[in-house]
Image 1 (spheres, protein in one colour):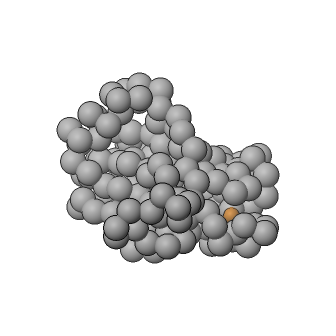
Image 2 (cartoon, protein in one colour):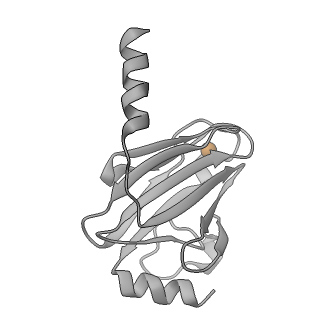
Length: 151
Ligand SMILES: [Cu+2]
């Protein structure tokens, strides 16, 4: 108990700094993303249907609406679930955030470079567990701002 309580105490003292907040809500079986800093942007992200694939799309990894974030910005992730436990995972960055209903988990990250990163739910969450991929697109801040404005 002693080391845990000490850690919790010091964790509470840390003032982590974020420029941008992203709320991720897990559902059976899709993700919802909510950005509320510049403009209220809220959308769902489903697996992309193979009928509407374009050249270069990856089967079982492409989504209809990508999660877009700027690089070199401190991002605060708030993640929760509306049903069972899911896990928002981006392999390339070793990010694995458990989405648990009733609990908001918070995580801070600063993406150092632009790119497209793929992930999948990594908590067995039901029949369509393998069909809720994640695509994280890291762009320059100006492009991110323009993308926000089209909503
Ligand atoms: Cu899941």
